[in-house]
Amino acid sequence: MNTNTPPRWDLSNVFPGLESEQFRAAFQEYQKRISNLDQQFTEQAAQAGAGTPSAQLAMILGDLIENYNALLKLGGTIRVYIHSFVATDSFNKEAKKLLSEYEQARIYLEKFNVRLEGWIGKLAEGLPEVLEHPGIAQEHSFFLKETAEQSRFLMSEAEEGLAAELNLNGANAWSKLQGTVTSQLSVDFELDGKLQKLSMPALINLRGHRDGAVRQRAYTVEMAAWKTIEEPLAAAMNGIKGTVNTLNHHRGRTDAMHSALDASRIDRGTLEALLNAMQASFPMFWEYFRAKARKLGQEKLAWWDLFAPMGSSERVYSFTEAQKFILENFDSFSPKLSAFAKRAFEQRWIDAEQRVGKRGGAFCMSVPGVAESRVLCNFDGSLDQVSTIAHELGHAFHNECMFKAGKTDLQRSTPMTLAETASILCETIVVEAALKRSNNPQEELAILETSLTGAAQVIVDIYSRYLFEKEVFERRAQSELSADDLCEIMEKAQKDTYGDGLDEHHLHKYMWTWKPHYYSAGLSFYNFPYAFGLLFSNGLYAIYQQQGAAFIPAYTNLLASTGEGMAAELAERFGINIRTPEFWEQSLKIIGQRIDRYKNLV
Image (tube, rainbow, N blue to C red; front, side, top):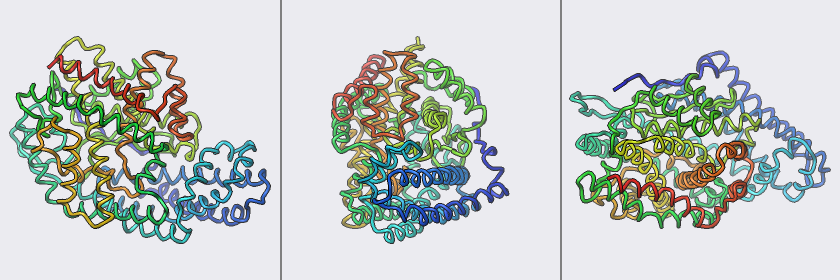
């Protein structure tokens, strides 16, 4: 077994440090620009209205958008830089203090956003004529039209301003509590004959350990650990979901799903088509679970064996080996993608080391000031974690395509559904390339296992998370929910989706505690977009298999354009109709073929 220390990311090309003069100067400039933009709006835009000549309105809008983009670029860079410290070290008091200062400054930007959105809404009727004039406004036509449409769901300017201020000490504080409490929790665990103190991400990663006894013991310890902090996390969940319900009511939203659909740039019909196809696919996943249980000598699969490695998966990758594996497989798809990933590795864009104080899971952050990205993961040497790095590098490549195309911050605002396109396609590239070169049944089984584990999470488990969040929102409208209530809802959702594929006596009732997506007032239902991304990517990959290298230019152009169109319109570029079940069912059949291969091997 090769071992090397997984890297920590480097952001020294962004700012020298949190206490550096450059960072402080940028922070002060950010605050100044917010004030200047607000003043510009007051002096110019607020004095213009429906009677103003369209050419003049186009110029006013263009100036505002240009300055707004510059502000967003600076603010986004500052936010990401601070977050890079908070996410990797929740004990860092200076970073937390600066994050609070940034959020205080951002309140003024949010108030400006409300004024701007409301004003654009008043111009809605005359926008088509305004957008006939070439220039910055015309280049941002999608942003302007979408903003005008969404302005219908604004409260008054005073109410929105108050909501922004209260959010800082309400929902945002609850979100921080969840992140801090879960990242600082650690447990004592005997592993390889040594008693070790493990962070929760490190403990969770033991779900893929080759020893079943270790997996079961880790599950038991994990359940006990979440029990110790369930009350503050239940309070955080109640605070956030209650806030969302209240604001949606006052904004005239139908429900929390209403805003999630708009943010995803899809309609309810598209969501229903997706969900119905997912639900219809559950039996084939149950067959996969039962086949795995038989291989492990069990009647039904317990939760702790859901991620058990199969085949020759006892291999542990060093980070260097993971890097080589990813680059080789990316190259089989596109040398351009491989070269990009090589730059990300060489310039230390990735923080992969597991440590206490670092948040669990994985994510990718865009750093607009330097037109780069940064990736966080918790690397343990498993094939699953190799796939996770490929996934996050897919997000980074998506950012790269937009940066290279010269897209502004407003033009890069990608919906949740399309945000997963490149990331999941990169996972598919790695899996398909690995399967193609494998001539060992045990190695093929291991690769299929990693692929199907991920697919089951995105289709079956994601549906359970959708059901959980839906019921939480509905019941929270009536009263607060206890930790026991949340556990009950989660277990019910898992039984409804995993069916008889899993042992119903050993599920994961605490899944709600550590998934950060539940703890965001501004991002409800961040679950179905993963399924959308997986199946949309499967469909795109099938087109790539037909077209080969000719597919790449159209694909990178799609990635560059995801902030400037509705999901259905962008999908139509490839002849894909996402509003009907047929497309989703065809994409699910690709997973079904892998399940059939898997059953033949076990």
